[in-house]
Length: 482
Image 1 (cartoon, helix red, strand yellow):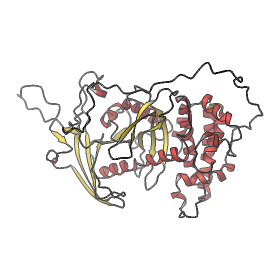
Image 2 (spheres, one colour):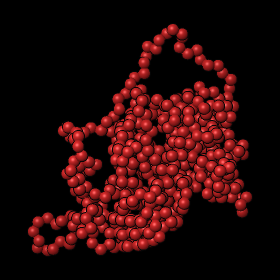
Image 3 (cartoon, helix red, strand yellow):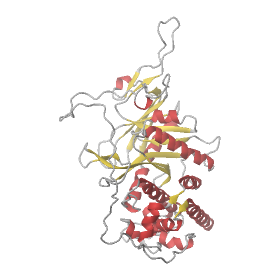
């Protein structure tokens, strides 16, 4: 049985490598060997030129840069290949997708177009920096249990002036359509959960994806104000019937009332977890921000609000309550427990970002054009997928100071260490390089008369023209009712 599982995993990985090569429609051999060099390099990737010295990369460094600059990747077909492989699922068999934005910072790349000011955290408390870069929205399928593995399915670069909620909804729609076409979801299966952090507008995502088998779970800020369902209209009452009920203020316990669901459980990392849920709450929408173009009466998007309280954090910091909003209705105690546990699994996507950046070298190349950055990003997704498919096959070449780990507990970095020994068993459709000689280049003494154009960083326009305050305001922060 074990040998049959290993043989099946080997066939699955081999089939994905063949399909990945077919997705490379321009300079396919150089791009494929570049991906193998990323997987087989010793240690973290620090620069592209170092990958040309890896034995699996049989070409020169010139072809490596030319492949990224002028190669072609069929992103639609590669996205379908990522959706067709075996994906992790929750305990009840449903797919759980996490969406988040990570930034490829390029502060000194003045000749790179379409850079946007990206929000980054500073070293001090409450210090935030805005650094130019390329923000990418990434969708991953989450895995149940104690693991740092995810299954990346899609990556999209946000362009200047693009609404993040609308772009994310379009990206989710495209990804879910691929999953349904690949047979990952069938009618009658549980709805797919989409887990997002507080930076996303959960009710708007639920509204834009209402025609798909999707339920949105999003964290909300602790200063939000939601509304209850409107009271029944009494015959004979003058005036228009109300559309909203009483307020539910996150920061005011007197407005909460009795929760509809209350559960308590003991966790290994967070101690005692107390969860309370209130059904049928919705934001009071207005014709502004993302809803400014909405015609007619704005919708009422109901859903339960979940508050999670824990007793401790692994870092020793003081825990804060977590507020969640779900697009479903009438959550049961079992569903409430699954929801907050699914949200905690969302942080696994941060481990994926760290591996892509620090180990596989996603943000190391100094790429000029955003189109080349998109090609390199999809190569990273294909490389990570090969590592995930190689989990049952890779040995554990652990360091002398590391503890042994079972096969199902290997981290992505450990699987990558053994990928070089696994590669001879896998097909390599890339053909051998042909001998060539470098071009003449620019003649000596002739200056460059066509300098590369420089591009400005796109900044979000501010409607408030008042001077920035030099001292912190003592005025209470206005309530977020929308």
